[in-house]
Each structure stands twice: as C-alpha cells, then as structure tokens.
Image (cartoon, helix red, strand yellow):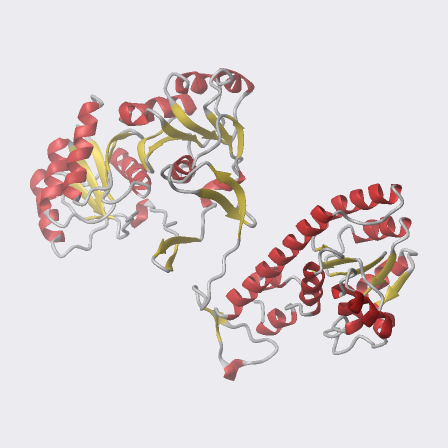
Length: 533
C-alpha cells in the first residue's frame, strides 16, 4: 500500500505518517511535507522522484503528472488500466491525504491583495482530490484531519486480519466528503472573484480590490442536520441544514436535551424566539406563536421575565415556543411547566430545572450556549426563495439608541417612556408587518401582527390586551413603519398610549404629528423601518 501526503495544514500529519509507516505503508510526499516527515526520521519518497520531474514554477506544478494521476485513477479491476500502468512504469497510489491552500482564510483577512488571493487558489490539490474521489473503490481520499482517527482505526483493524485496506463504506464516505470540500472551495473562489470590482489601472502586487457586497454569483454551502418528519404541512417534505461553520450562540449550535424530534415549524418558531431574546442584554423571556412574539418581557430573573411575558397573551402562549437568554432555574421551570409548551430554549438549565421537566417527556428542551456579547451574533445575510430565484439582503441588524430618536411633538417623553420605547422597538423588529406593539415597564401589553392594514394591527393589539385583562393606560407604542394616516395613531392613543415611536417618512407626517399634539401625547421618529414579511 502506498500513500501520497500533500498538506498545507500539517496538524497531526506526523503522527498519522508514523502510524502508516508502522503498518508498512510506503510514503510519498511533496515539498514542505516531505521535508517535515524526513526530519522526523520517516522514509519518504518525494513526488519529484516518482514523476522524474522537478517541482517547478514556485511549486505551482508538482503533482500534475501521469505518474500521480495514473496511480490514483487506474481501476484495479480493469486489466487494460493495469496493463497501461505497467507499460509506463506507474505504481498505484492507494491512499491520498491532502488539504488545500487556505483560500477562504486568506480572503477573509482585511487588506488581502488580489495577488495573495490568486496565489492561494490550489490547483494540484483539488485535481488529485477529484482523481482519488472518482476512483473511490480503489483509493481512500482524506481531506481533513478530523478523518485521521477513523482511517487509522480501519487500517489497523484490517492489518490485524492480514490486510491493509479501507472498507467500501468508509472509502465512499471519504469520497463524498472530498467532493463536498471541492465544491465549498470552488464556491468560495467564485464568490470572491465575482465580487471583485476589477480596476486594471491599479493592478500591482499590493493591489487590494474593492469588492461588491453581493457577488456576481452567489454560492452558499450548508450541511444537513437532520431529516424532518414533514414540512409546514404533513404533505410537504423537509430537512434542516446548518451553515458549514455555524456562529456561536446560533440556533444551529443548540443541543436538544429531551423531548420529541423538532418539527419544521418548531425550528422556524424557535429561531424567531431565539433571535428576539438575544437582542436583550438583561434577563428576558420571549414567547413565540406562529413566528410572532406574543409575549416579551425583561425582569430581574428568568421567573419574573417569564411571568410578565406570559401575561401579555396567555391564550396564544398555549403550545408556544419559549426562549430565555439566561439559564433556567427551578423557579422558572416550575412556572413554565404549568403551561403547554412545545420548545423551551435557554443557554443552560439547572439540575433542578431539568428534574422539573423529566416527567414531561414530550417537551423539547434546547440548550444553546451564548458567547460573550451574544447580542452581536447575527446572520449577516438573509435569503428568501422566489420562483426560480433568490432574494438576498443584508440582515436587519440595526440597533436603535436614544441618541437616534427625534422628538417631533410638543410633549417630551419621560425617561421611563424612552426606556420602554427602546424595549418596544426591539420587539417590533421581530413582529410580522404590519406591527404594532404596546409596552410598559419592560413588558409587552398588546401585540398586533401581520395585518394588511396598520389600522387593523392597532385594533387587534388593543383587543388582545383587553382579552388578557391588561390596561393600556400610559403605555408606549412602537410601529414598525410610519402611520400613513392619523387614524392608526388615533386608535393607539384612544387605547391609552401616551408615547409613540415610528420611523417617519410619510407624505402625511405632519398630519400625524398634528394629531399627536392634539391628543397631547409624545411621539418620536426613529428614521428606520423594520418591515418583516
């Protein structure tokens, strides 16, 4: 058995090579890898000796040769192939261990020059990987250090049986992983190059190109987390995928501690709840039903935050998704356990909290560790599928500060109202448009969502508050977009609001401002809209 080793990232490669040598595997290698192995006292043949051709063009050409690719591609069960190898004095290569030049890491560095990016495009590595992966029945292809242990375990086991080979299932799995890696690599190169605003007159070794935010071709890569029982409805099929490298604190990093398998709707609603609760720095609880927050509150602890959030809309909270941004303790767990909950998410659960839910075997508990500064962990881009196409936009990660508010009425908001306005504005960003959110004392008091008319959303928010027996007197209101007419403002003020936040920007802004002054309420413009469809 012969193995060709050519790696840029040499993590673990010496130990692997030693283990291969101990099994009697012949070692072939290139450049720096060959030098490293030789320094460790391992017998290694350089590729240049195999090909009879020196590495050239600053290492750009070293493995692009029939004696390499012939050894990888020849089918052992095809006599004509084996005869061709014999005629041209080519030996088979049975194991290929390759990782590629770090293109993705290079272009991610600030100030990466076009020259550096181009030099970090691997040619020989991907070519060998493709050859070995195509011939998976005869060749094992290893493209990541995480695969070393499994490969060596099989080789040692087979060696003990008098052979030294990998099983068909492992070789096939390695080949799939190899083609996936090549796809990811080529996609990254395409994304980078098609985003470059090329300026020939500036071309030099130090040229750092300007790049468009949206590349000419958009290539995204995901890995499947699990197949789902069905999609939004039972007649639809579905699966859950995550980013190749999910961000810390994101839903895809969560661990399910107990409960039934997550459904498509569970995951969609859980993401809405999790992203909303992450926007608060203090202890918060978010209850989501059908992708809309139906109760949000902050408190001194998880129990207080949950108790306030639940009051907003107990009816909708039934069968909802609940998220905390603080570990759940026994007190909060006991309170939540009194209602029917589909999914409960938190950074952690105390042992006592887990015990509370032990008998509720269907409740899905999700632990999602939050990093420091977790509110900054956001998707950079958002996508939406349309017929034979894709909409791509930068994510709505705008955070409103007090300094951003423009007071447009005679009446000035009180400090308490301003704090509640910022709270209400955070919530409104996660409510489907048209969104109207009444809040008071760090708690949602009424939520109107997803209506075709802002006026109807305002009315529904009032109706829901009344149904929950909550008074809207002296509340604040956030509207995710401007009031096109004064009628929406009239409704929220008649319900009890004394302060309103809206983006502004309507042709009838003055009409709405005049209405606020007429009512004697305060109104601020945020200058930012938060449509969420």
